[in-house]
Image 1 (cartoon, rainbow, N blue to C red):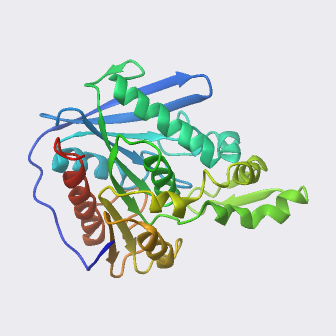
Image 2 (image 1 turned 30 degrees about the vertical axis):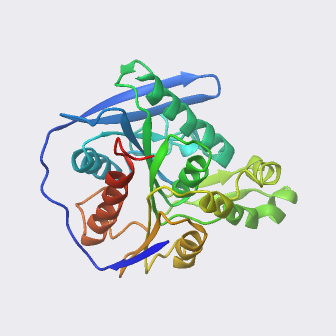
Amino acid sequence: MRGARASGGRMGARAMTVERAPFGIRVPGADLRGDAWIPERPAANAAIVVCHGFKGFKDWGFFPHVSERLADAVGTLVVSFNFEGSGVRESADAFDDLPAFARNTFTKELLDLEIILDGLAAGRLGELELPPATRFGLLGHSRGGATCILKASVRRQVRALATWASIASAERYGAYAERWESGLPVVIHNARTGQDMPLERPVLDDLRANGTRLDVLSAAAALSIPWAIVHGEDDESVPLTDAEALAAASGAGGRLVRIEGAGHTFGTGHPFEGSTPALERALEAAVEAFHEGLTEEAP
């Protein structure tokens, strides 16, 4: 594991046009909506998938900016999508499917991500045809980071990883166990939308039934691919100690990047009002990992 600390930075100016192409996938057990960000001259056989976190969605804040910048800077296809349990269905901005949010689990997110990767490998996301990919990079924010770590540990085609403000354990949701077992509801308030967002008992049942499969630190220890572990030193939602635990568990490819003064979303919000030095530094770290791992020569 390597380490780095940064207070800011910028990547070079945009060099090519990036096309945004929406897609939808409906298969038994999943109804996924997403976007493919396609540069003019995409690298052959490679794709990056961007995963949002808890109370996130593909159009939240920095995700469209990050997807476009990655497609440009890495020169490869980038896909962002809504997990079915994101709570966002038809809307581009609001949580319009709270029952799906209430029942979302880590196992379901892993299945959703697998569907996206399988589609990319086959060269088709719903009706959208794309060049088949054999090498993947994953970028996940917050809870999405844990989902990406778990998937990278079991899918050999994943060659590079970037996690931003990632949680180090799925067990944090076990804190609600007593309330669920008492038959009481668990409700998460969303300050931005003013909505009370329910979580139901299947979240706990999934953790208990799949504890070994959902062990994030064990998954981290199994990884040897280039991995940027990015975390703001002033993260108000996920403590820096989570990133330190991931870095300690990671293999030689892990690189801890601490961003001084940065919070959970690197100084940005929703709606997105422009990038920040902290977000640009997070992007630089991700681009470095993807350049290193998504080459034809990479093992």
